[in-house]
Length: 428
Image 1 (tube, rainbow, N blue to C red):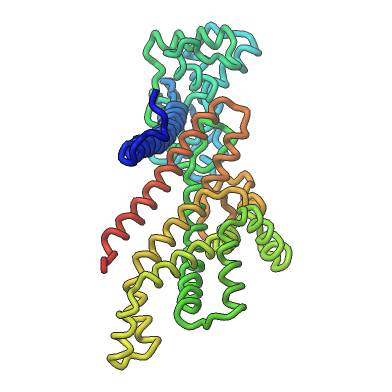
Image 2: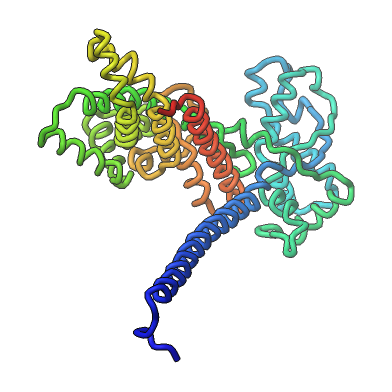
């Protein structure tokens, strides 16, 4: 065996090189394994969300022959909106179900049978009669919206163990009867994108939360971007180095790492308790998210301004431009791509935040679609939180579907940020 002390200098260097190469290979392997682990987690996450949420884009409908009987509806003129509002469309649906399932006799069984069709089907029949008043007295065959228990069971029929839930033996027989007659099917769920929230899972949609998110983000970007850019310009171009500016810079950097729930508490104390602004409105949500987003925009804007070469400033000043003209005409246009990128990333972060909005009451159950920044509203992350907390099984797939929409929104905003950076950036 060769003693190390007997090795020549060249041999010791070669041994050292081999050791360093092995260490480098291990280091690269750890990095590659980390990337593979991250991608695997991402694939598992997306697979889980998509597999759970894809069912929400289809909704079960049942084919029923409905008769617009004036006596059952208790109306005489279908063109009169006041009569349509109080018409008994539930009675029409019950008569249609009794006609389809004449073997159901008992009072209890009939009550269970009437739950086969969603309460929202009555509104659909009213809209059809309102659009065509001549239907009064006629019989028509429609695909009516099924209740969420039937919807969940029918969608899970191809699974190893179909989800029965609250369904009893008779209800299962009724579904089998509908399947044999070809009177039950799934259709694309347009209500998911056209309805607001609802206590009935089959009627629940994300439009209200989507509009609320857009209004909240509009308030946030309108307030945070100009304030953040102005603060960055002052700190980079005008402020002199002093203990005060150092203190401000350190605090701005620290604020970017403060938990978002702290901004929610701040908004609760200032906007709701001090200014007595109403809860659950996009205006207050936007103000809170502005506080949270400002540090991100200021930091990214300062970095973009710093990246502009000093020669640009010196050339502008040398040509006789004032400092304000130099900033507005040269520095700001060149730094704008970086500023926009930071702002969009800040907006994407704000879009996914839930905690600060919960603190200002945007967790209320709101069915109506908001028409402005002062209307009661909720946002997508809070809507996901509410549905995830609901006990009904049908809300599980809607929760995943809403997450898919939120992810699509976030990916779109990040794609826009990348496109803007590639499109507008200049290399020096």
